[in-house]
Amino acid sequence: MKKYTLDSFSTGGHFGPYGGMYAPEMLVPALQELEAAYLEARADKGFQQEFEDLLRTYSGRPTPLYLGENFSRRLGGARVYFKQEGLGQTGSHKINNVLGQALLARRMGKKRLIAETGAGQHGLATATAAARFGFECEIFMGEVDMMRQRPNVFWMEQLGATVTPVPYGTRTLKDAVNESFKNWIENLEDTHLLVGSALSAHPYPTIVRDFQCVIGHEVRSQMMQAEGRLPDVLVACVGGGSNSLGMFYPFLGDEQVEMIGVEAAGLGIGTGRHSARFQGGRLGVIEGYKSYFLQDEDGQTLGTHSVAAGLDYPGIGPEHAWLHDLGRVKYTGATDSETLEAMKLLMRTEGLIPALESAHAVAEAVRRAPAMRPDQLMVVNLSGRGDKDIFIVAEALGDRAWMEFLRSKVEAADHGE
Image 1 (cartoon, helix red, strand yellow):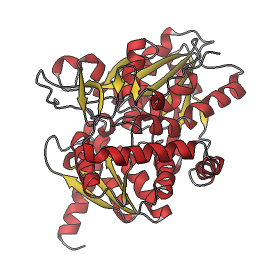
Image 2 (image 1 turned 90 degrees about the vertical axis):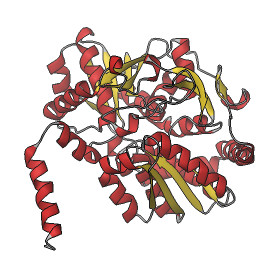
Image 3 (image 1 turned 45 degrees about the vertical axis):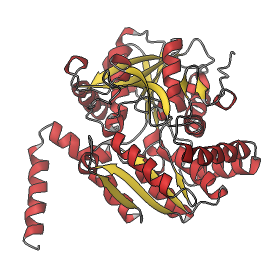
Image 4 (image 1 turned 135 degrees about the vertical axis):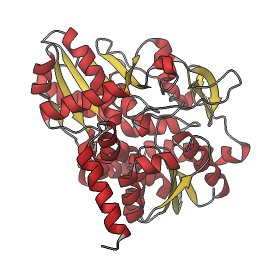
C-alpha cells in the first residue's frame, strides 16, 4: 500500500504551495513553542496512551459504524454505512482534537483555553475539556451564530465558559477566528488558542488532522470486520476540514478508495450566497495560512452563507487545497434545500438525526449511491448530531407547532410564570 507521506513539519508548514506560518511576529514564538511541544508529545508514549485512554473512557470511542440498510434500500445502488461521530462526548467529532490540544496546553503549563466556534460544537467541546482539566475558558462566537446555535451557547455557559459575542463584520465564524487571535496575542503567557479545524497558521493544520485521524483508523478496522475489505467511497462535509481529513487521511495511500468532500453550496453557486471555496474561491493568505478563500479582486473576504453554521466560513484548510490540486479528493457542493431533504430522508429511514453540517455529506450520498453497484460500499461521516440545529431546522421547515411553543414560552416569561 502506498502511503501519503507529506509531513508539514519537514516543509516549513506547507502542503505543496499551501499552508505556512503567515503570522504576526509576536505570535511566532508561541507557534514555535506549540510545534516543539507537539513533536515532543507525539514521540511520548505516555502522552499518546493518556490521549487514547481519554478517547475511550471519557469520549466513548470507538464510535459505531452503522449499515443504513433502509437508507440504502430506498436509494438503490451502494450499501451505505454511517460513521456515527455524534455519539461521542459533546455530540460531534470536535472532542477528539480538543482533548489532544488540552493535554498539550497542560504540558506547556497554560492555565487558560480560548477558542473560536461557529456551530458551537467546537466551543462546547472546548468548554467541556476546560471543565475536565480545570482551565479557565473563553469562547468567541459571532452574534449571528450565537442566535442560531443558542442550545450550545447555553451549555457552554453552564460548563463555566465565558461566551463572548463578536458584533462586527459578518458576525459569523470568520470574525470569531479574528477575535480569538487578537485575544491570544494579548495573553500569550498563560493562554492556549485551541484551533478547532485543520487550518490557521502552522502547526495547527497538522496537529488537528493528527488528533482527528482516529476517525479514519476506526473506519478502516470496522470495515474490515464488517465487510472484509475497504470501502469504495468515503464522503464527508468540508468546512475548515477536520472531520473529513480525519476520515480521509488514513486512506490516502489506498488508490482504490475514492474520497469526496462536500462544501456548502448554500442558495446555489450562481447566487453568490454560498460557502464553496473550490467553486468560486481565489488563492490568498488570510488568518495565518495560504489556501483558497472566497474573496474579491482586492483580497477582501466575501460574505458567505450556509444553513449550517459550521460550514459558513470563507476559507478551507491548506491540506484540502493540496489534495484538491492533486486530484486525490473530489470536492462537490450541496445546497441548503438538498441538505434539508437529505436530513429528512435519513431521519425517516434510519431514525438518525444528523447535524446540518453532516447532512451535506448525506446529500452527496443521495446523489451518488443510486449510480453505484449493489456490491459497492460507501461510508458517510456523520460528524455530529442534529440536536443543536432544532431552531434552524424548525424555522426552515416552517414548523408552526414549534414556533407556537417558543412564543408561549416567551409570553410566559414576560408574565413571570
